[in-house]
Each structure stands twice: as C-alpha cells, then as structure tokens.
Image 1 (cartoon, rainbow, N blue to C red):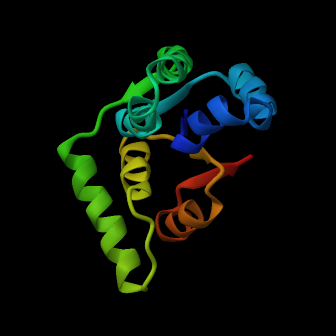
Image 2 (cartoon, rainbow, N blue to C red):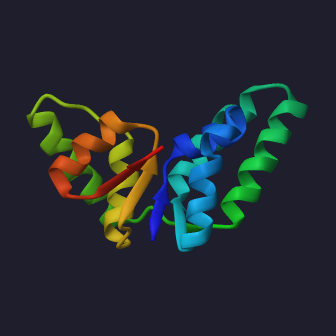
Length: 135
C-alpha cells in the first residue's frame, strides 16, 4: 500500500495534469491510502476562501479521499513522529509535519509515500528506510 501525501491533493486542485500519470498507475496497482492528517492539511485552506470556491475544493478532495483508505493518527504515530523529528533535529534538519505522515505510513505498513516533496521525505527515507515515490 502506498500513502498519498498532501502535495497530491494540492495538485489535484491546482495542477491536475501533474498527477494524471501517477493516478493512473496507482489505480492499476490498487491499495492506496492517505492519512487523516493529510486530509486535514488539504482541506484547511478551503475554509479560508470564498464559499463557492472552498466548496468546490472540498468536493474534489472529499471525492478523492473517499476512494482511499484513510489512516488514523494514533498515539503510537505521535511517538514515531516525535522520534523521527527528534533524530532529524539532532542533525539540524527539519521536516515539520511530514514526520506525522511518515510515522502513520510506517506504523501501517505502507511501502512508500507518494509526494512532490522530495527534500523532506528524502530526509525521512534516509533515516527510516520509508520509500518515497515522487512525481
């Protein structure tokens, strides 16, 4: 199973052509997920804009998320995210909330995170071994 990062949903709204190929390939492979945290991040801005535009964005993201397994954010994930961020901070590297996505993916046995954010998830891969599939 592969875990879609927030960048996927941002591109779904802003640049759908950027995710067309990866979406077709993931559909063929099956077994995709995202995290409840990524859904939150993707939806957040839609509530700060005019109602019609925000509703359109929420509709697109909700339709996409409803086709996926949405992984919860649990206590064990918080511990793993803190471990990841702490280890990277020791090396003077920061990945912010991407550690949450990575922790949830790792704890749920995901084989990779699908993202446009090569830098943050590359740091996480080097530390944890979690594969990163970029588009």
